[in-house]
Length: 299
Image (cartoon, rainbow, N blue to C red; front, side, top):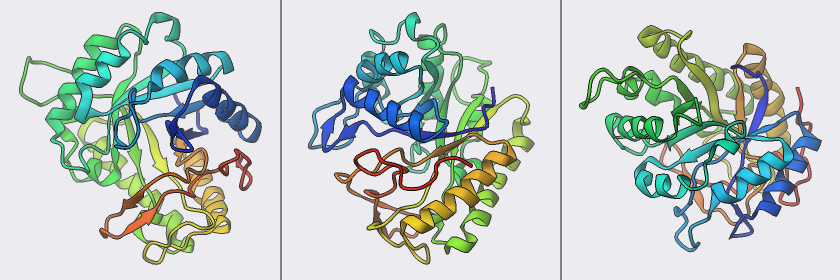
């Protein structure tokens, strides 16, 4: 199913605390008013990745909120802690949420961080067995270059140790950023689209495009008070420019785009790009921290 729309990455924390159903409902209301989005993406069921926080019960809070506001969720599970994620999701993901959960993704840039493709595939295959009667799309998300350079091939083909045959994964989120390539804003769109094209070109040669559903899993640009990265300059004007020129171009090309991210997150630590330099991710939202749009969110 291709919706050809812009959707948003929704983070599990608000002001350093785990979000509740009320928080998620407020997110959904703001996104619905500011854009045409009715789908969000998360990374974890019980996010433990920020050490100072207790685990967040993401699925238990976001699914009833999404159902109430008529949103869908691509619900993420960390591949590196898959068994804990699965255990937390089992009592929550019942058939009543079959229409609310558009897909599950197991792993978010796991290959980029050095996890083996077959370890990720094994977790995905278990998720298909465990949750496949409720959720029809179960896949993974990773950086564009891991699809382009063949690292992800065993995930697409199912060519991993274990029972044979096992089908390859057919739902893929491909992340690509002109910003994290250190590009000036006037070259960011070309770099972004070229990276997506390279990833999709390799996937097409390997398994064809008719058998897989591919989304741009993350893209974006930092606004005012964000960090510069190489020749990529932060600023809300550049963020709006990339949205209109880059995101909208991908949409016109026929790719669903997850914009990173829904709203500014002032609590977040710094992230590291391809050059190993660090930059903050506190000001990447399409909405500010009060959920007010920073620029036009439609193409």
